[in-house]
Image 1 (cartoon, rainbow, N blue to C red):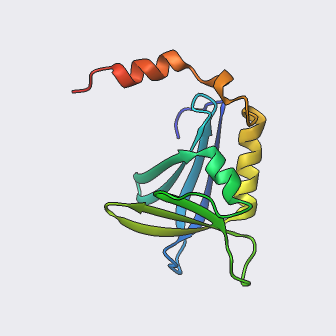
Image 2: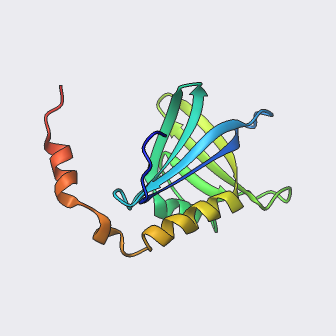
Image 3: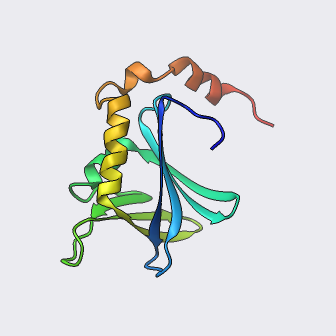
Length: 140
């Protein structure tokens, strides 16, 4: 990331994708300018990332209990093998993926995001005019 944003949290780490023995580089991102969402990206090529955006609340809830009923579902590992693993299931028309990520790493990421934008104060950080302008701007 070339631009440094003092109102953002970025955390890179390796995760296990689809039970693969080789971990995949991933990146969690939160920006105060988009206070309701987080992004989870996976490096698929040296300069190519696949990114999923979803509600920060979904990630917060998923740390404690199963959360999500749509394309993204998050839950603590329910097996007796490892209670420090968070399982994230991603589904799209292109396929399905299961990600295993350290719960402690996610907690640290969320703590940093909460320091920037405490839950319940998201609307104070949202530039609604910019959101509307982005939605209504004609795209080629």
